[in-house]
Length: 193
Image (cartoon, rainbow, N blue to C red):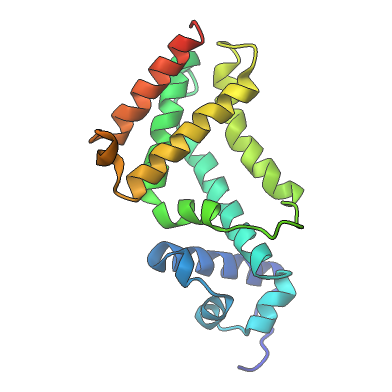
């Protein structure tokens, strides 16, 4: 494939992330490759690796866009809802996002960085932004919103995994939303709320 100069570096990055996201959503993380993305956008793999430092960096950028999409989805919640009601709404919207974007959500957790590499600050900030949504709802309910937000998100992660692997019924539940609501209700009651 000949060298192209049709797009700037930032434009190539945007094209590649969009094409990579589509590839993952349609065919799953295990079928993702930079070569396939390069073919879709009409550039060489070498061009992609002039934009991304390696495949890990490329996938982190795709995951970063997924995290942004999740955050945007959560901002659709009515801003006048507070406390426990807001926590329920956040859980509901999180599970909806997961069910609408299963392969992209799974890629966030399936991709594993080499142990010697730390997540970049920009990526950690995107994760913390998601936790912050829940922490803000918890702040009026507990003096430890940071820790409780992570516990609730971890539980939602497990529920999401059960949902996407079609194993939710193995825990005796038909409806993941009902399971999440029951968990949150019980959890918040345990905080003496």
